[in-house]
Image 1: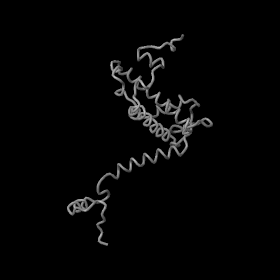
Image 2: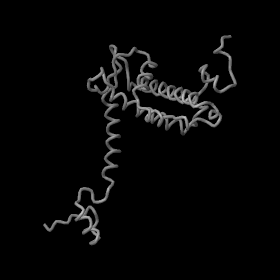
Image 3: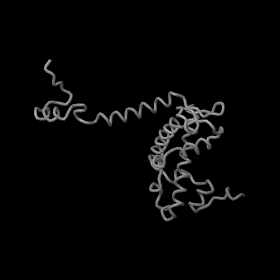
Image 4: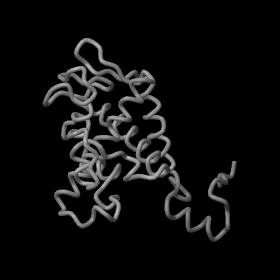
Length: 190
């Protein structure tokens, strides 16, 4: 038996040997939320990826990687902002038994968990034909990108249009509030 085939009781050793399962760190609800968040953050990173330094982003293409999913996962994780990575899984999300380790060890564990989430999501996306490798490029079809953009645009619009009296000058807001006119009511005399 080799070292990696021996089951170890120490949780930290299980992680380093690749024996730890995501189920040890996340319950089902947290896992599903993390997978969905991972998917959308990966698509955003895919859309914003640049083919070369100083060039504009070409949505849907990532060049310069081999055909291994691990290479793509590493690329996406490196090009995703620190804040976005911590939204997926952070040190504060670790179970209590891992809080006694040093901060750098805790960060390594969180990075391992994020990488596992990335790999699982990439496998799902590949199996659903949302990404594939063609001629030295990773490709994401426009339909997946458009779905992401529609959801992102809808969320942004709902935030912008949430204000009452949107687009009205302050002088009209005060007058209409005094008259108790609903914000959507026209005030023209025609």
